[in-house]
Length: 426
Ligand code: S3P
Image (cartoon, rainbow, N blue to C red):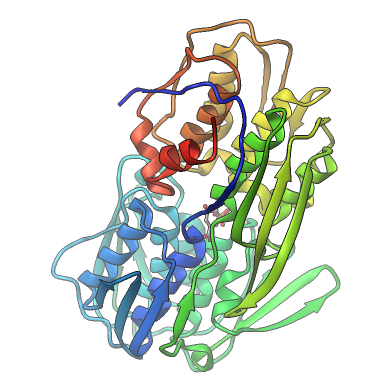
C-alpha cells in the first residue's frame, strides 16, 4: 500500500503511546514461563508482539485479553509443551532470538521459522552460545531461520563474553540460563538494553569496563503484574517532528526512561534539542516519565561509538533530524544496522539519494549533506517499519507530494502511527 503524507504546520498537545516493544515481548515470555496467572497492562498490540503471543500459545500457554489487560496463565518450570506445528516468529528478530534460548533448553524438539526478512537475518550469533551450553541446534546453510531445536541431555551453564553488542544474544543466553541449576554469566563490554536482566532480577557486577550478569534457575520468573511503559523508540519519531517544526510543543506521557534506551534523548539534546523530562517514577523496576519537547534549532554533532547500541533503533529517525540540522550528518560504528528488518544503511542511503542529496555509504554507516532537490518522491520502506515511519516524518516536514511504499509495515511496532500523527498535528 502506498501512503501519501500531508505536510504538517505545527505539532501540539499531549499523547500517550502504546507499550514498549522490547518490554512487551519479555512480559509475554516471562509470564508464559512462570507458574500461574500474570497480568500485563499497556502491552503493545503490534504484529511483532502478536508473533510472540502466538508462539507461546502454540507452546501451550493461555494468553487472553480481558478489558485493557492481558491475562497470561503460565505452566511453570519446564511446563511448556511440544508444539504441534512449526513456531512462526513473523518479522520479529526479538521473538526469534529470545525464544531460541528457551526452546534450546526444552525436553522436546521444535522448529522456528520467520518471514522473508527475518529468514535473512543472522541466527548463528544465538546458536553459538547455546551450543556451548550443550544445546542441539540445526541452522540452515546460510545460518539463518528455519532453526531446529532437539532435546539434549547434556546441558550446562557457561560463562560467555558477548562478541557482538546485542541485547537479543545476551537475552537468549539468560533465558537459557534460567533452566539450569548452575550459574551462567554473560559478560558485556558495551552496554546494551538491560530489560531482560532487570526483569529476571539477575545479579550484576562490574569489573573494569565490563558488566557481568549472572543467572541460574533461581532467577526463573514467577507470576506477577507487569505495567509496560510507553515505547521510547516510537516516541522518538514524534520528538524529532516536534523539534523540527517551528512553533511546536508536545508532551509524550509515561515513556520508558530506562537508561539503556534514552541515548536518543541525549544525542538530540546535545544537538540543541529542547527536551525536558517530568513526573519521573519507577514502576516494576523500570523508570518512566513525561517527555516535553519544543521546536529547536539543531546542529550535527559527532556520535560516539559507545552510544550506538543505545540508539540503534532510533538511527533512521535521528538521521532525519540530522538532515535538517546545521552541518553534515555522519554516523559510523553502526554496522549492526545492516542486520535489522532491512539493511538500514542501504535503505536510508537509497531514500536520501531519491531526494537528490549527497550521500556517502560506508560499511558501518553513512553521511548525508547538500540540499533536497527533488519533489514527488516515492520512498521505499523496504518493508521496514522504522524506515517507513522515519520517511513519513521527513515527508510531513517538507511537501505534500511525498509518498511511502509498502507503508503497512508500520504495524510491526506501531499500527496506530498515522492516527497518532494526525491527533497531534495541524
Ligand atoms: C532488541 C534489541 C535490539 C533492537 C531490537 C530489540 C531487544 O537488537 O534492535 O529492536 O528487544 O532485545 P540487538 O540486540 O540485536 O541489537
